[in-house]
Length: 275
Image (cartoon, rainbow, N blue to C red):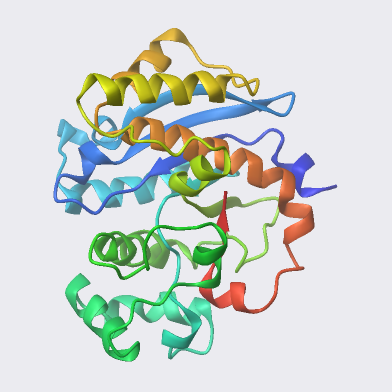
């Protein structure tokens, strides 16, 4: 059975990740299923709606995201944060060891960024996949280093030893496990020629979100009027990003048979962005 066939009945989760102090309001999640090969969106919500007391603090919400992944078995999760660092900046023998040791080696986000800068002699190096998908920043750039840090430390580290989860492509996508993939909504929008300014509270930003959604729905995606309005009205663009993350995850499922087991070794250490 192909990976695409294995994925056909899986629930799809697109996660727009954040490491902000109020991460619970910034992290949005889109849930859907595949219907005749197309995404059918079922839910779109901020993470804090799943948190007891509807708290938004990062230290409370990130464990809840980890629990969400754990309890949704045999699903597909597209997470919007870097899963690794450039190969030349890794001192560990493999990706698994890198992630397992990450919290001990890098005690704080600032330590992580400083270490990467020192090893790179002040340069901001990118991974091969970052170049290929035209990612806007290095994984330890000032704008996203906390996202990289908390994604690896608080999400990947606790789940890599879970026998119900496979992190792709570094771990084999076994049929009885959930599949975790790195996605980048900005890269997907670039691929679709839809990378326009849509984050903001001005009317032009709302019009951009409407335009992007109109174009995306032409691809056979199903979505209710309620969810469509919720995505368009979310001024930060986080809801839209989670939707794009879910779409990117669906697109990735069609490619898994051509990717898994055939990628050069560098991706097994640096990670691979599905877009």
